[in-house]
Image 1 (spheres, helix red, strand yellow):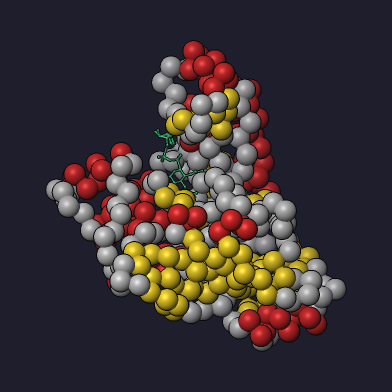
Image 2 (image 1 turned 90 degrees about the horizontal axis):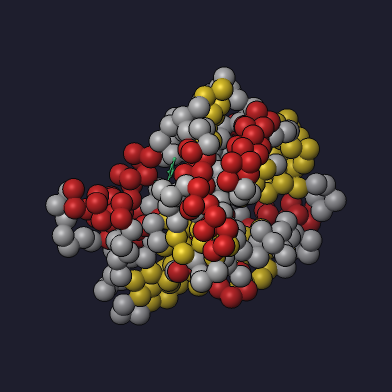
Length: 337
Ligand code: EPU
């Protein structure tokens, strides 16, 4: 366990922002994590997972703990299902591929989501009609102040749309060390009702898709719309899709009859932020080394050497413009540091 001073975080955040950490430590065992929390209890800490959901707008005046715990194991199984424990530092997509190789189904729609296992419950990752909570059993976490270990059940996590207790009441108090998920071994339940998935399967002439086919379709769709962070820095959706009242939606639709929407409840409607941002004229706009992705307006990008501050200022300009044009406040999905 080595502590490095004045370390660059550029390769540890998918936006590729060159912020510095006052000090940095790679954590590969729970014992090391416990020891460091005990010994450095009074030093400000910053917990880093896959770095896929944050925008660094400044240097980090703290000890950065990079959670690199590895391991995947089957903890129990029945004829039809299996519970798998994955350590927090496992890459999410590699885990999805591991599950597909074992013919374990349930997370194929979540293929190619950037980030690590440990961060997946924090924002209840989701795509194409599936959310982590659909397969989530529990997670283990270490309490930062006393190093006690707690198991959180699904209901403890209070999952919502890109939300959990770890972003709310317990923010900054726990480090997730592993996650248990229940997947299907047989009788896979495929979620192909999402229009784009159906189209992709149809185009490839697939009428009886396997979980592997669904994963391939999702990968193809994501690769066609979302930039690869290894090539162009980004954090996936930068904003959440806003949920507005049915009354506000009637007003919006009167002015913009082509606005897409999804009903959330009788009183609330979700509107795609990507559509609002595109309509506001930002899609594909580039300023110096940063901008809005040309194929998906929800994604802000770093073309090379942008600073987090520049990208944050663009995000604020987008928020202000969307508010002025549509009277809708869009919130960031990405954590602004
Ligand atoms: N749209 C536009 N212009 C754009 C982008 C989208 O008009 O530039 C419209 C589309 O035409 C479509 C609607 O917005 O009618 C929805 O677009 P899409 O299906 O691409 O999904 P999204 O709402 O933009 C959400 C998630 C994505 C997830 C997809 C697919 C959020 C904030 N984002 O995006 O998640 O992959 O659905 O399920 O909920 C992520 O979190 O990083 C992420 C990529």
